[in-house]
Length: 284
Length: 348
Image (cartoon, rainbow over all chains, first blue to last red):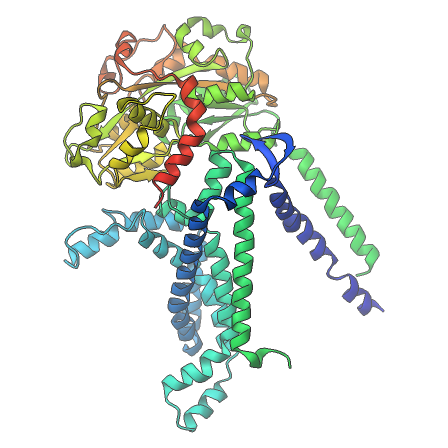
């Protein structure tokens, strides 16, 4: 009887908490887009102007697509860099596992803001990276990293890398070594084992990491705002400007809603794609 | 756990949450005065010569200085809808005009501000007879003499020798807005017509856009920019730190911007806020503000402008006659669209 009660009501606090703390603010955000707000003051009227001004303006479509493109690029970079790190962790023995885990987790010990300020010092025209490249005579003049897409990609990849590596590590830990050994015994090369045995088994981890990093990259604000400059063309920067500087809350809410829905749709597509390429993970 | 226990737990959590919300309000501490002031080193005189002595004069009162020149503070005040997290705010004249029109700063009774009798009347009217005129500053051009030649006029910024070395701020700050209005006026526009500014500003590119004046000063420090429109106070502080930087009051003149200080309407600390405003325009505090390295222009007529300030501001009030005064009443009507236009035009 007790067990039945638990299963019936155990989820209740989570539902209440999620509804109050996430569902309600998101709902208010959508509604805010339908209010007529003049420089932060509600005029008492409802209007479609907030959403209409966003949907009818090709500039925002361009910003949306660019945000999508940057988020996809960052996700790809995190996967390409993150997988070897996770694989190294999987192959490591004894204390090396702890060392790698510490290196992966270390960036999470400081805030994004602090790390981004660090990148500003490193990536500046007279920063450490340019000084090193100039010193080694690899370049003849400083490379512009700050306030360019290059700088933003470097910063966002570093900040979001742990969110890719951690699900991959967890996923690799579930790979049965016996399958790899069997493949080798049957004549497969190490490369074939990696691509045909190891990677397919970690697709749930790849799917989780890709979804997580994409969501975070798509809505990332501090890194592009600091490393890309005040006019870096990305949706979260425009949401901030519209809300906090122009005080056009209905248009800002419309932009934020589009960001939220867009992000959700893309993640849905990602999940569907991975489900399709891994039919064996689905219940028959 | 049974449903009854869960319900009790949820009710308890809800009550705790409501109690926390209620006790928070605008202030967690009844004797705290929260003042939005300048960021960085410009805040030092406010701490040393204004808020610390204010705390000593008013035992039990603490003053919290919040450093910000950013418009998002205004967004927070408006979002709080009468329960502002701040009590007193510094606003440049362009923002002061909007704040008075929107009615979220209080019209402090003149009787509560005896020191206002010592303030130049033209500054009082610049602040729309609301709050107090605390200082005035100049927007000029700062440059690194090791990297670029000296500019003498605003139109020199269009000299190709500065291409790729220029820094700007968005019109969200008074500094950036001042530059847009200046560009419009230089090339056939006016405070009412900013359109001529856009093609001319485009000619200045590529330039770095900083989100705020303090961020622009940091870019100067890190060598990202070698020339930029800048506040005289920021230039003076950077030069004091040994940075190779010269401040120019370019022709036809540096732009004068008066700063006002107001008590926010419905603040929980109206009475303390008014006292703070009165101390702000005292001859004692203003004479500290006018000293190196801050060089904030004194609005109290009993305060002499220090002679060593010549590199950063006219050493007499009469010298300000050669500076540029914009018709901010007209210009602020176009600020929102100017900010949006700038962000679109120079996005990358």
